[in-house]
Every structure is written in structure tokens, then in C-alpha cells.
Image (cartoon, rainbow, N blue to C red; front, side, top):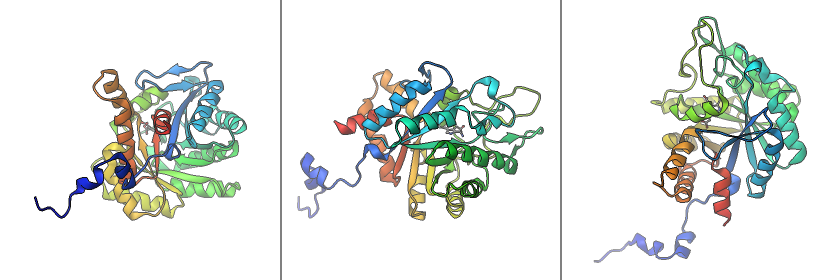
Amino acid sequence: MDLTYRPRRLRRSSALRSLVREHILHPSDFIYPLFVHEGSEVQPIGAMPGASRWDLESLIGEVQRAWNLGIRCVVLFPKINESLKSEDGAECFNEKGLIPNAIRILKKEIPQMTIMTDVALDPYSSDGHDGIVSSDGIVLNDETIEFLCRQAVVQAQAGADLIGPSDMMDGRVGAIREALDDEGFEDIGIISYSAKYSSAYYGPFREALDSAPRLISSKPIPKDKSTYQMDPANAREAITEAQLDEQEGADILMVKPGLAYLDIIYRLREESQLPIAAYNVSGEYSMVKAAVEKGWIDERSVVLETLLSFKRAGSDLILTYHACDAAKWLNE
Ligand code: PBG
């Protein structure tokens, strides 16, 4: 055949392929999410094989392991004892609470690791919502933001480097920025869950933290988070959310979940010059693990291909429970 272009010319050898490769994963692209609890042992999480709830002592070792593999940021999520949960979630700004304690311990033992936090009420709320639920079942925006600001300041005081509001209340990024600045934390960044969808992919995470919305009294509790998290049908709205967060002072924008929303990552990459993070969420992780356990897919290839897709779509950072495994494979 008389072909001018033969794209296969550049695929002939592994060396040639590496010369023209457009995207490469590095362990430092990953943010490693870790669950912590008050107990004194490492508890496996049923719906997330390979992930655990860490006690504070073992957490240090796990974060050190991540650092040694080249991971440069971890994000902490608390499993709060039932007795500390309340309707308003006020435990979230207890300076002696689980998360501030974990941050202080990690900052003392492994000060070089970047610590990201999650700002929202759900782990602390007896209703299982990210905000305060009124007696008639409305998730209150402005009242919640006051609590989120106090939570963010307590996390910064404990030593957090990046504050991650995941609650999707309107105006929270600006309010948290101001609260941090007022307390002298103008150097502490905000990584905002900007386009966070109301997704069924968070199921295993809610099992890990026992944080799903639930009824415990006669108060009507919304059964899902669709009055604040985004409708999966909407793409343009993600741009609006991201623009608002940027105007309000976010330093990094996030899309969540990741895999079913690669188009949103791509759109935000076109619209913003800020770094973009993708959250490869719990349900995405558990689906891979389940298929691996069945022997249906090859874990290493599927995980690395999936993580690469986030970078190709335009994200700079990837929150993923596969972080340590992937870093190990990349280092081999
Ligand atoms: C809490 C929060 C959630 C996740 C991160 N922060 C759950 C939710 O919004 O219900 C989900 C992460 C995952 O599924 O891996 N606001």
C-alpha cells in the first residue's frame, strides 16, 4: 500500500513508544486516603479489600511506608465513635478530637509528608449528612458553614497543610479562606471538592466510616445528598462550581468521582489554570478489587491504565486507595 503516514512506525519498540509517550504517572501524583479510628488495632474494611481503619500508632508506619514509596500527600478520614456523634456534628471542631490528634502525631513523626484533611460534618453527624439538618429535613447552608470554618481552623492549628472542603455548601470556600486568614493561616491551601456529584460510588466509603444518611428519630432525614451534591446529569454546572471556588480562593480544584466523570476533568482543564485533582473513589476501587478476587482482570495493568486515564483527561493529582500499590509498581 502507498501510505504516507503509518502511525505504527512509532510503536515498533518499547524504546520508541517511551520517546513519544504523552503522559507518565509518578508516585508524587498520588494523594493517599487513610481511614483512622479510636481503636487500638488495624481493622480491615469489608467492602474495600486491602484498605483498613488505622489506629494512630499503626498510622505512623503506614504513612512512613507511603513516603518511602514516593507518595507526598495523605488525606485523613475519621471513623467517629457513635457516642461522639450529634445532630450538629460539633465534634468536628474538637481540638482534641481524632483528626487533630492524628495530624499532630504525623506532623511530629513524619513532618515532610503533606497532610490534607476533609472538611464536612458527615463523620460526626448522627444524621449522616455533610451539613446540619433542620427539624423539617433541610440541610442548612449558612449555619453549616460556620461549623466548617471552625473545623478547618482546628485542622490548620493541628498542622494540616491542605484543607479539603467536601461538603458542597454554597460559599464555603470563601468563608473558609477568610477564617483561615483571620487566624494567621494565609499559607495553608484549599483543595476544593468543586465538582462533587451525588454518586452511588461512595457506598464503600460510607461503610468504612459508618457515615451514611440515616433515621434515628422522627426528624425527616433526606435519604441521599442530592440537595447539595451535583446531579450526575450536569456538566456545564461543574464549570460554574469550579469558577465560584476559584473566585472564592481555592488553590486546587477537584472532580469526584473520577472514572465516570473524565469528561468533567477534561472540561475543567480547559477552563481553569489551577491544578486539578481527580478522586478515584471507593466504589471504583472496590469494583476493581472484586474483579481481581474473581480472577477476571489483571490488577496491576487495570489500575495503572485507570490512573493514567485521569492524567490523560487533564488532572495533575489523583486521590486513590491504590496509591501504595501503584507507587510500588511504578518504582519497579
Ligand atoms: C464526605 C466524603 C465522602 C467521600 C469523601 N468525603 C462521602 C460522601 O460525600 O458521602 C467519598 C470518598 C469515596 O467514596 O472514596 N463528605
